[in-house]
Amino acid sequence: MTRAVSPRSVRLRRSVLSVPAINRRALEKIASLDCDAVICDLEDSVAPEKKAEARENLRSFFAAQPPPGRAGKEWIIRINSLSSGFGAHDLELVLALEPDAVLLPKIDEPQDVTVVSDRLAEADAREDLRIWAMIETPRSILNAAAIAEAGRTPGSRLDCFVVGLNDLRKETGVLPQPGRAYLVPWLMQVVLAVSAYGLDAVDSVFNDFKDFQALDAECAEGHAMGFAGKMLIHPSQIDIANRHFGPNEAALAEAKAIIAAFADPAASGLNVVNLGGRMVERLHLVQAERLVHKARLISDRHRPSTGSG
Ligand code: COA
Ligand code: MG
Image 1: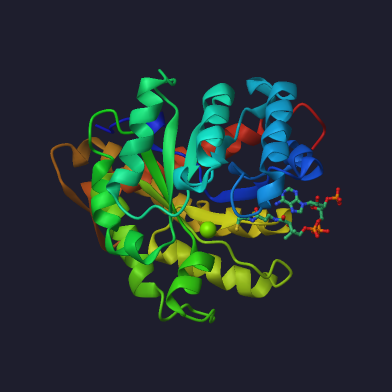
Image 2 (image 1 turned 135 degrees about the vertical axis):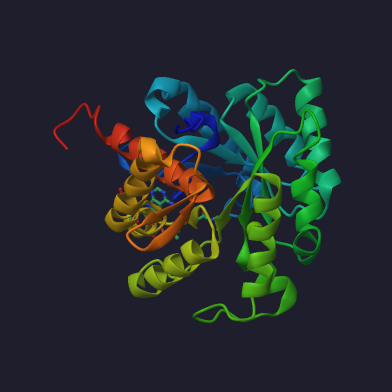
Protein backbone atom coordinates (compact mmCIF):
# COMPACT_ATOMS: atom_id res chain seq x y z
CA MET A 1 0.00 0.00 0.00
CA THR A 2 1.44 3.44 -0.91
CA ARG A 3 1.55 6.14 1.73
CA ALA A 4 0.38 9.55 0.59
CA VAL A 5 3.00 12.30 0.88
CA SER A 6 1.71 15.19 2.92
CA PRO A 7 1.70 18.30 0.70
CA ARG A 8 3.15 20.41 3.54
CA SER A 9 6.22 18.23 3.75
CA VAL A 10 7.31 18.89 0.17
CA ARG A 11 8.02 22.40 -1.04
CA LEU A 12 9.53 23.64 -4.25
CA ARG A 13 12.65 25.60 -3.47
CA ARG A 14 14.64 25.02 -6.65
CA SER A 15 15.08 28.69 -7.47
CA VAL A 16 15.07 31.28 -4.68
CA LEU A 17 15.49 34.71 -6.26
CA SER A 18 16.76 37.63 -4.20
CA VAL A 19 15.44 41.06 -5.10
CA PRO A 20 16.66 44.25 -3.44
CA ALA A 21 13.58 45.77 -1.80
CA ILE A 22 14.76 49.18 -2.97
CA ASN A 23 14.34 48.12 -6.60
CA ARG A 24 10.66 48.67 -7.52
CA ARG A 25 11.18 47.78 -11.15
CA ALA A 26 12.75 44.43 -10.26
CA LEU A 27 10.00 43.68 -7.71
CA GLU A 28 7.37 44.23 -10.37
CA LYS A 29 9.08 41.81 -12.72
CA ILE A 30 8.69 38.89 -10.33
CA ALA A 31 5.11 38.03 -11.28
CA SER A 32 6.36 37.08 -14.74
CA LEU A 33 9.26 34.95 -13.47
CA ASP A 34 9.24 31.20 -12.92
CA CYS A 35 11.15 31.12 -9.64
CA ASP A 36 9.83 29.05 -6.73
CA ALA A 37 10.56 31.59 -4.03
CA VAL A 38 11.41 35.27 -3.73
CA ILE A 39 13.56 36.90 -1.09
CA CYS A 40 12.70 40.58 -0.78
CA ASP A 41 15.96 41.85 0.63
CA LEU A 42 16.17 44.67 3.15
CA GLU A 43 19.68 43.73 4.25
CA ASP A 44 22.95 43.81 2.32
CA SER A 45 21.60 44.92 -1.07
CA VAL A 46 20.08 48.08 0.45
CA ALA A 47 22.28 50.99 1.56
CA PRO A 48 21.79 52.16 5.18
CA GLU A 49 20.30 55.51 4.11
CA LYS A 50 17.78 53.71 1.88
CA LYS A 51 16.41 51.22 4.42
CA ALA A 52 13.27 53.24 5.22
CA GLU A 53 12.52 53.79 1.54
CA ALA A 54 13.00 50.07 0.85
CA ARG A 55 10.50 49.21 3.61
CA GLU A 56 7.96 51.62 2.10
CA ASN A 57 8.54 50.04 -1.29
CA LEU A 58 7.71 46.64 0.10
CA ARG A 59 4.67 47.96 1.92
CA SER A 60 3.18 49.41 -1.24
CA PHE A 61 4.25 46.43 -3.37
CA PHE A 62 2.54 43.95 -1.05
CA ALA A 63 -0.56 46.17 -0.88
CA ALA A 64 -0.73 46.30 -4.68
CA GLN A 65 -0.18 42.53 -4.98
CA PRO A 66 -2.50 40.87 -2.47
CA PRO A 67 -2.01 37.14 -1.87
CA PRO A 68 -3.79 35.85 -5.01
CA GLY A 69 -1.34 37.82 -7.14
CA ARG A 70 1.55 36.37 -5.22
CA ALA A 71 0.23 32.81 -5.35
CA GLY A 72 2.42 29.99 -6.58
CA LYS A 73 5.61 31.33 -5.02
CA GLU A 74 6.97 31.48 -1.50
CA TRP A 75 7.56 35.06 -0.36
CA ILE A 76 10.32 35.74 2.11
CA ILE A 77 11.50 39.04 3.55
CA ARG A 78 15.15 39.21 4.56
CA ILE A 79 15.51 41.61 7.47
CA ASN A 80 18.58 43.26 8.95
CA SER A 81 19.95 41.73 12.12
CA LEU A 82 18.21 42.88 15.28
CA SER A 83 21.48 44.35 16.55
CA SER A 84 21.86 46.58 13.47
CA GLY A 85 19.37 49.26 14.47
CA PHE A 86 17.20 48.43 11.43
CA GLY A 87 16.03 44.94 12.37
CA ALA A 88 13.25 45.93 14.79
CA HIS A 89 11.56 48.13 12.16
CA ASP A 90 12.02 45.39 9.58
CA LEU A 91 10.36 42.87 11.87
CA GLU A 92 7.39 45.22 12.38
CA LEU A 93 7.05 45.34 8.62
CA VAL A 94 7.13 41.54 8.44
CA LEU A 95 4.31 41.38 10.99
CA ALA A 96 2.29 43.85 8.93
CA LEU A 97 2.88 42.22 5.54
CA GLU A 98 2.71 38.57 6.60
CA PRO A 99 4.99 37.00 4.00
CA ASP A 100 5.48 33.23 4.08
CA ALA A 101 8.75 33.61 5.97
CA VAL A 102 11.24 36.00 7.46
CA LEU A 103 14.91 35.37 6.64
CA LEU A 104 17.39 36.17 9.41
CA PRO A 105 20.90 37.20 8.36
CA LYS A 106 24.19 36.46 10.09
CA ILE A 107 22.84 33.94 12.55
CA ASP A 108 25.55 32.68 14.91
CA GLU A 109 23.73 30.44 17.36
CA PRO A 110 20.29 28.99 18.22
CA GLN A 111 19.34 31.97 20.39
CA ASP A 112 19.48 34.23 17.32
CA VAL A 113 16.53 32.25 15.99
CA THR A 114 14.62 31.74 19.23
CA VAL A 115 14.69 35.45 20.05
CA VAL A 116 12.81 36.09 16.81
CA SER A 117 10.35 33.23 17.25
CA ASP A 118 9.61 34.59 20.74
CA ARG A 119 8.96 38.05 19.31
CA LEU A 120 6.68 36.66 16.64
CA ALA A 121 4.76 34.71 19.29
CA GLU A 122 4.42 37.80 21.50
CA ALA A 123 3.04 39.69 18.53
CA ASP A 124 0.56 36.87 17.77
CA ALA A 125 2.02 36.39 14.33
CA ARG A 126 0.17 33.95 12.06
CA GLU A 127 1.18 30.42 12.98
CA ASP A 128 2.41 29.58 9.53
CA LEU A 129 4.77 32.55 9.31
CA ARG A 130 8.07 30.68 9.17
CA ILE A 131 11.68 31.54 9.89
CA TRP A 132 14.53 31.00 7.46
CA ALA A 133 18.14 31.48 8.57
CA MET A 134 21.21 32.60 6.64
CA ILE A 135 24.16 30.33 7.41
CA GLU A 136 27.00 32.66 6.53
CA THR A 137 29.19 33.23 9.56
CA PRO A 138 31.93 30.86 10.75
CA ARG A 139 30.03 30.35 14.02
CA SER A 140 26.86 29.41 12.17
CA ILE A 141 28.73 26.62 10.38
CA LEU A 142 30.19 25.41 13.67
CA ASN A 143 26.72 25.58 15.26
CA ALA A 144 24.68 24.39 12.26
CA ALA A 145 23.38 21.26 14.02
CA ALA A 146 22.45 23.13 17.20
CA ILE A 147 20.67 25.84 15.21
CA ALA A 148 18.76 23.24 13.18
CA GLU A 149 17.87 21.37 16.36
CA ALA A 150 16.35 24.57 17.76
CA GLY A 151 13.78 24.11 15.01
CA ARG A 152 12.41 21.21 17.08
CA THR A 153 11.51 23.44 20.02
CA PRO A 154 7.73 23.84 20.26
CA GLY A 155 6.74 27.17 18.73
CA SER A 156 9.90 27.37 16.65
CA ARG A 157 9.10 28.39 13.12
CA LEU A 158 12.44 27.40 11.64
CA ASP A 159 12.01 25.91 8.19
CA CYS A 160 14.99 26.49 5.93
CA PHE A 161 18.68 27.41 5.89
CA VAL A 162 20.22 29.50 3.13
CA VAL A 163 23.99 29.36 2.78
CA GLY A 164 25.68 32.74 2.25
CA LEU A 165 29.14 32.20 0.83
CA ASN A 166 29.94 35.84 0.12
CA ASP A 167 29.97 36.58 3.85
CA LEU A 168 31.59 33.27 4.73
CA ARG A 169 34.41 33.83 2.23
CA LYS A 170 34.91 37.33 3.56
CA GLU A 171 35.18 36.05 7.14
CA THR A 172 37.41 33.09 6.39
CA GLY A 173 39.55 34.15 3.45
CA VAL A 174 38.52 31.13 1.35
CA LEU A 175 38.75 32.21 -2.27
CA PRO A 176 36.03 31.64 -4.88
CA GLN A 177 37.03 28.60 -6.96
CA PRO A 178 35.23 26.27 -9.34
CA GLY A 179 34.20 23.16 -7.41
CA ARG A 180 34.41 25.00 -4.07
CA ALA A 181 36.85 22.37 -2.78
CA TYR A 182 37.68 24.15 0.48
CA LEU A 183 34.04 24.96 1.18
CA VAL A 184 32.55 21.53 0.55
CA PRO A 185 33.16 20.25 4.11
CA TRP A 186 31.25 23.22 5.52
CA LEU A 187 28.48 22.96 2.94
CA MET A 188 28.01 19.29 3.79
CA GLN A 189 27.82 20.16 7.50
CA VAL A 190 24.85 22.34 6.64
CA VAL A 191 23.17 19.62 4.58
CA LEU A 192 23.76 17.11 7.37
CA ALA A 193 22.28 19.45 9.97
CA VAL A 194 19.09 20.10 8.00
CA SER A 195 18.71 16.42 7.18
CA ALA A 196 18.95 15.52 10.86
CA TYR A 197 16.18 17.91 11.84
CA GLY A 198 13.83 17.91 8.85
CA LEU A 199 14.61 21.32 7.35
CA ASP A 200 15.60 22.36 3.82
CA ALA A 201 18.91 23.93 2.81
CA VAL A 202 19.30 26.29 -0.13
CA ASP A 203 22.73 26.68 -1.71
CA SER A 204 24.49 30.04 -1.93
CA VAL A 205 24.27 32.63 -4.71
CA PHE A 206 26.59 32.53 -7.70
CA ASN A 207 27.74 36.11 -8.33
CA ASP A 208 28.81 36.03 -11.98
CA PHE A 209 25.33 36.14 -13.47
CA LYS A 210 26.56 36.12 -17.06
CA ASP A 211 28.57 32.91 -16.68
CA PHE A 212 25.90 30.28 -17.32
CA GLN A 213 28.35 27.44 -17.78
CA ALA A 214 29.84 27.94 -14.33
CA LEU A 215 26.37 28.35 -12.80
CA ASP A 216 25.32 25.12 -14.47
CA ALA A 217 28.28 23.31 -12.91
CA GLU A 218 27.61 24.80 -9.47
CA CYS A 219 23.91 23.88 -9.60
CA ALA A 220 24.81 20.31 -10.57
CA GLU A 221 27.19 20.21 -7.62
CA GLY A 222 24.67 21.71 -5.18
CA HIS A 223 22.01 19.24 -6.28
CA ALA A 224 24.41 16.31 -5.88
CA MET A 225 25.27 17.55 -2.36
CA GLY A 226 21.62 17.43 -1.31
CA PHE A 227 20.58 21.08 -1.43
CA ALA A 228 16.92 21.75 -2.24
CA GLY A 229 17.74 24.63 -4.54
CA LYS A 230 19.86 27.69 -5.11
CA MET A 231 19.61 31.29 -4.02
CA LEU A 232 19.79 33.45 -7.15
CA ILE A 233 20.52 37.07 -7.89
CA HIS A 234 19.31 37.47 -11.47
CA PRO A 235 16.28 36.27 -13.48
CA SER A 236 18.59 34.74 -16.09
CA GLN A 237 19.68 32.16 -13.47
CA ILE A 238 16.19 30.75 -12.82
CA ASP A 239 15.88 28.22 -15.63
CA ILE A 240 19.24 26.63 -14.90
CA ALA A 241 18.42 26.21 -11.20
CA ASN A 242 14.94 24.84 -11.96
CA ARG A 243 16.41 22.31 -14.33
CA HIS A 244 19.04 21.01 -11.93
CA PHE A 245 17.00 20.96 -8.74
CA GLY A 246 13.75 19.76 -10.31
CA PRO A 247 12.99 16.13 -11.11
CA ASN A 248 14.40 15.21 -14.53
CA GLU A 249 12.68 12.77 -16.91
CA ALA A 250 14.88 9.80 -16.02
CA ALA A 251 14.55 10.31 -12.26
CA LEU A 252 10.80 10.74 -12.60
CA ALA A 253 10.42 7.58 -14.68
CA GLU A 254 12.39 5.64 -12.11
CA ALA A 255 10.35 7.08 -9.24
CA LYS A 256 7.13 6.01 -10.98
CA ALA A 257 8.55 2.52 -11.55
CA ILE A 258 9.40 2.24 -7.83
CA ILE A 259 5.91 3.36 -6.82
CA ALA A 260 4.36 0.87 -9.27
CA ALA A 261 6.60 -1.94 -7.99
CA PHE A 262 5.46 -1.45 -4.40
CA ALA A 263 1.82 -0.99 -5.46
CA ASP A 264 1.91 -4.44 -7.07
CA PRO A 265 -0.01 -6.91 -4.86
CA ALA A 266 3.00 -9.23 -5.15
CA ALA A 267 5.00 -6.68 -3.13
CA SER A 268 2.52 -6.51 -0.29
CA GLY A 269 4.32 -7.26 2.95
CA LEU A 270 7.73 -6.91 1.29
CA ASN A 271 10.28 -4.31 2.28
CA VAL A 272 12.60 -4.97 -0.63
CA VAL A 273 11.78 -5.74 -4.24
CA ASN A 274 13.75 -6.55 -7.36
CA LEU A 275 13.38 -3.77 -9.92
CA GLY A 276 15.07 -4.84 -13.16
CA GLY A 277 17.99 -6.41 -11.33
CA ARG A 278 18.38 -3.73 -8.70
CA MET A 279 17.35 -3.86 -5.06
CA VAL A 280 14.79 -1.25 -4.13
CA GLU A 281 13.74 -0.71 -0.53
CA ARG A 282 10.73 0.99 0.98
CA LEU A 283 12.94 3.93 1.91
CA HIS A 284 13.35 4.50 -1.84
CA LEU A 285 9.58 4.54 -2.08
CA VAL A 286 9.43 7.56 0.23
CA GLN A 287 12.01 9.37 -1.92
CA ALA A 288 10.12 8.39 -5.07
CA GLU A 289 6.83 9.73 -3.70
CA ARG A 290 8.48 13.03 -2.80
CA LEU A 291 9.89 13.37 -6.28
CA VAL A 292 6.58 12.62 -7.97
CA HIS A 293 4.88 15.08 -5.64
CA LYS A 294 7.41 17.77 -6.59
CA ALA A 295 6.80 17.08 -10.27
CA ARG A 296 3.07 17.45 -9.65
CA LEU A 297 3.57 20.78 -7.87
CA ILE A 298 5.56 22.02 -10.87
CA SER A 299 3.01 20.91 -13.46
CA ASP A 300 0.13 22.28 -11.34
CA ARG A 301 1.83 25.64 -11.31
CA HIS A 302 2.09 25.74 -15.07
CA ARG A 303 -1.40 24.37 -15.82
CA PRO A 304 -3.72 27.17 -14.63
CA SER A 305 -1.85 29.82 -16.63
CA THR A 306 -4.18 32.73 -17.48
CA GLY A 307 -2.26 33.82 -20.56
CA SER A 308 -1.19 32.00 -23.67
CA GLY A 309 2.24 31.00 -22.33
N1 COA B 1 14.99 40.27 -9.56
C1 COA B 1 14.09 40.72 -10.49
N2 COA B 1 14.46 41.38 -11.61
C2 COA B 1 15.78 41.60 -11.76
C3 COA B 1 16.75 41.17 -10.85
C4 COA B 1 16.30 40.49 -9.70
N3 COA B 1 17.16 40.05 -8.77
N4 COA B 1 17.97 41.52 -11.28
C5 COA B 1 17.79 42.15 -12.47
N5 COA B 1 16.47 42.20 -12.75
C6 COA B 1 15.84 42.78 -13.92
C7 COA B 1 16.31 44.22 -14.11
O1 COA B 1 15.46 45.08 -13.38
C8 COA B 1 16.20 44.39 -15.61
O2 COA B 1 14.86 44.65 -15.91
P1 COA B 1 14.49 45.68 -17.11
O3 COA B 1 15.07 45.05 -18.35
O4 COA B 1 13.01 45.71 -17.10
O5 COA B 1 15.13 46.96 -16.74
C9 COA B 1 16.50 42.99 -16.15
O6 COA B 1 16.29 42.09 -15.06
C10 COA B 1 17.91 42.86 -16.66
O7 COA B 1 18.79 43.24 -15.64
P2 COA B 1 20.34 43.54 -15.94
O8 COA B 1 20.45 44.83 -16.70
O9 COA B 1 20.93 42.34 -16.58
O10 COA B 1 20.96 43.67 -14.52
P3 COA B 1 21.00 44.97 -13.60
O11 COA B 1 22.25 45.72 -13.90
O12 COA B 1 19.71 45.71 -13.65
O13 COA B 1 21.12 44.29 -12.17
C11 COA B 1 22.20 43.31 -10.30
C12 COA B 1 22.23 43.50 -11.82
C13 COA B 1 23.23 42.28 -9.87
C14 COA B 1 22.47 44.64 -9.62
C15 COA B 1 20.77 42.79 -9.92
O14 COA B 1 20.55 41.62 -10.65
C16 COA B 1 20.50 42.61 -8.47
O15 COA B 1 20.33 43.57 -7.74
N6 COA B 1 20.40 41.34 -8.01
C17 COA B 1 20.04 40.99 -6.66
C18 COA B 1 21.10 41.38 -5.68
C19 COA B 1 20.75 40.91 -4.29
O16 COA B 1 19.60 40.66 -3.97
N7 COA B 1 21.77 40.78 -3.42
C20 COA B 1 21.56 40.31 -2.10
C21 COA B 1 21.66 38.84 -1.99
S1 COA B 1 23.27 38.25 -2.29
MG1 MG C 1 25.06 37.91 3.65
